[in-house]
Length: 273
Ligand SMILES: C[S@@+](CC[C@H](N)C(=O)[O-])C[C@H]1O[C@@H](n2cnc3c(N)ncnc32)[C@H](O)[C@@H]1O
Image (tube, rainbow, N blue to C red; front, side, top):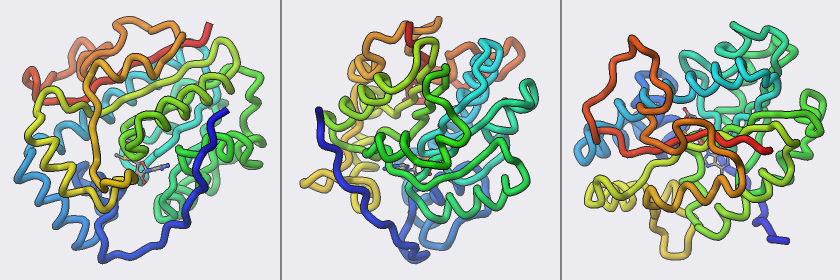
């Protein structure tokens, strides 16, 4: 049984760039400060495709949610949900399944406060503070338990969040624990940036964001290769088309697709038998 690290308290200092707010800036949001915008712009000098990648990541998320809703899933746990943006999970799923319930989880208190304010009137949605590195504290959270019965099928979303773990063994332990905890018929969605396509750019970005994102002793963020992502699904049955670059996961027929190899992130959906 792995021992998960204790969740560290996270303060709120607008002078330090913060992952959720940098991501919000790339998505064209307004919930960011000067330090976030500076960091985001510095990253764009290395990889100008980052906003495109974020948008493609959100489109991937939207398509997976619609797929899961059509497959009958009515309980969603979105870990590392990010700041509210256009097309939040509960909005997408409740369009086709108004009775669906969504638990948003993020380690960032600003994300939690913003999110909670947005869904205050929606009794089927809750936003809780939690750290993906400690899945048990998420799964046993009383507010999650109010909305989600883990004996019933759920969808666990790990969309663009696992890089924050930055420890291969812990990432495996976390995904294994989550797979064990969900009922048969549940799904897990994973998307992850990979290093294979633009190793130089990802190395430089890793240095830029080391302080904010890295948890390893050497203080460096390490992005995995594409081949390292599939094993995180363990024995889940991969939904067609399997693990692919995110724009290639069941694109809508009329959807504009980015030029090949501009998006260095892969995603997939696995189902527990
Ligand atoms: C790149 S954003 C992705 C947001 C959203 N999932 C999406 O795809 O649009 C990553 C989010 O994960 C959150 N995060 C980072 N480390 C985390 C951790 N250890 N536990 C939970 N959330 C974390 C950040 O605060 C941020 O909101």
